[in-house]
Amino acid sequence: MSGSEGASQDFESLYGNHHGWLLAWVNWRLGNAADAADLAHDAFVRLLTRPCKFDNARHARTYLRRMANGMCIDLWRRRDLEQAWLDALAAQPEPTVSSAEDQAMVLQALGEIDAMLRGLPPKTAHAFVMAVACEMTDQEVADVLGVSSRMVRKYVAQAMLSCMKLEARLAAGMAGTPQVAAP
Image 1 (spheres, helix red, strand yellow):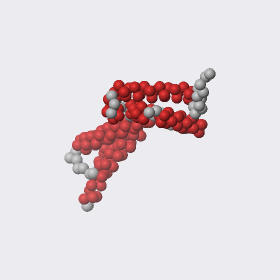
Image 2 (cartoon, one colour):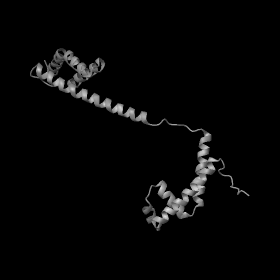
Image 3 (cartoon, rainbow, N blue to C red):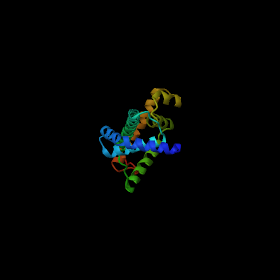
Image 4 (cartoon, rainbow, N blue to C red):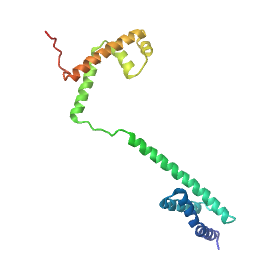
């Protein structure tokens, strides 16, 4: 009898003597017969690909139990990771599709904001964009523009006033129409 035949018989004997026991033990650990059957099968496949020689049945069961316990832990970790991923996906807002009309309104509003910023003095517009969009501090903006932080606050206040006027015009539905002074 060749070495591979002996290893095959050893494996068959090991499988026959311990599969039922391992299946029951894994089922007890997992509480799920289908998962237990899969894991017990995988344990013996792993043992088949990496054969071991055991002195007695107790050593074989100890080895199988340790291997199966590690596989149970891997299964639980994988499921925890999958659940965390599903929870993260569920927490994401549903993607919304804007209507063509909504998209046109947004583009119009962006055009109005761009025109408002272009109508401001350059330092005022730059100070506003750096402070609001880039979240820079007054001192950081002042350093970039070469002015005092007090001047930066003045520039930002002027730009905010222009934004509020634009918002009022947009809310009133008068964006893009010239303002007529009352008599």
